[in-house]
Image (cartoon, rainbow over all chains, first blue to last red; front, top):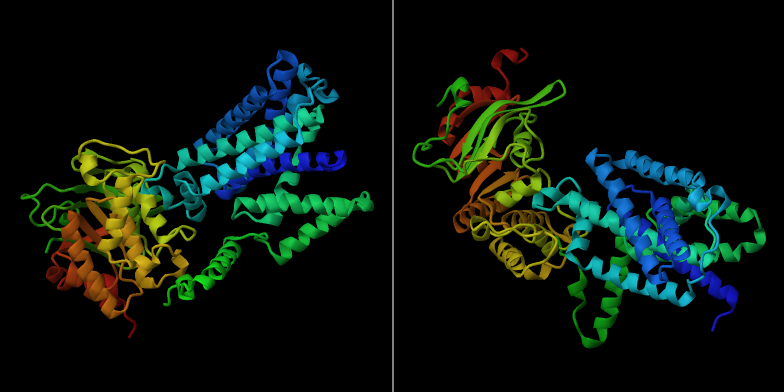
Length: 299
Length: 277
């Protein structure tokens, strides 16, 4: 259906979207866990080792990679929560984990260190990546409408008062962190079996920035902000391909402009509410339902 | 009227007849070198249904609420709820045991609807009867009982059905206040702490609020503790009053006793000798 280059582009974007959603989850609670590159690496190496060295089936290896990365996130965030880290201290802590893991992998002979891990089967296809992404999007939609989603929103709104209404905040945060880590690991597994070559330096600070930028562009308020941001940046990269190395300068300039023009990102709660109200109004007009139903209460 | 020295260790009138629901003993809170509360003792539910804590700004009223709800762990002292020691208990568990509160300045979850704000609390804990029977809830699932309690709470504060799907920024001050109270009573608490509930309301709304709180305290059968600066409101609703000043319990007594106490006047207005000529 697609040419091989388009297929390749779409597959990588699906993987990046899954990783961006994993990165989005803790940030959506306004918690600065930025260890996504580490969780991505855990998933990538775990699944690659399982398929190459132990002959484990690809789907099982993917699941195992996600589980290990989720467990890694749970461990890191349990430690951070235990010592009550918050804000930038949390960011530094989680970043330190990702960087430490990268250094350990670089010096580990079992995974061939900085020479790179080769011989991984090419199992990831566009269908697999897109199918998983579709399932994850449905799960995110369900999460938004679930009790856990409401607890997450409450923590993002006002973490101080949330426990005063019986909400087990630490447990809620750890569940969300684990889910985010597992998604990062799943994306890592898909990546490993698509690129078929792993080098620890691929999972460094540059990867964190690559997963943070979609959220800067798309916004933090809704999960589809991360999807929109990933798609926008991918298109931007393709459009500016001819600029060669100057492409990065162009991306940096676009990021600065976005931060100045719309620091909250393109999709915010207000944007979505306005679009939603507009659509409802448009739908309700032919049926004769009063527009006033959509209006806020008059003070 | 009790002298300040003894007020700190005394119960409210009628304490002998009814055991207290919530008792704080010698609570002290220090933030670094600042003493926010110093050996404050009080008993809630010992003969009075509605009580009030008053005092000038910075007297330690909100800190005391924070201690009672587990937000701040006291440096010294202990708290008993129905005779069980709850000192140092986690905030979410204290809420589950039946102590609920509102905040100085309205604090609602702005990205949740009115109904979600209320169910956030009601799904988290079992109702009073279930608590008595020792039942617990995970807090991660919705439940029919939690939804019923939330709807009952919203009905009790007469929140219009039409606004229950709205988000807090769309509400009037009165309705925002009602959402806060509905959220607090949706757990069917035994002690409800209200921090400046009348702030910003007009006289008609204050009267309405007073009638509502008295009605709710009977309907749900909870003990109400009100922190408030509006003395008319306090004097018209409270059966017993504690006065805090600089973190210490200055006086306690009936509204008439408090109104007649020169130390209370001095705490609010300053000593005559401090006045400049």
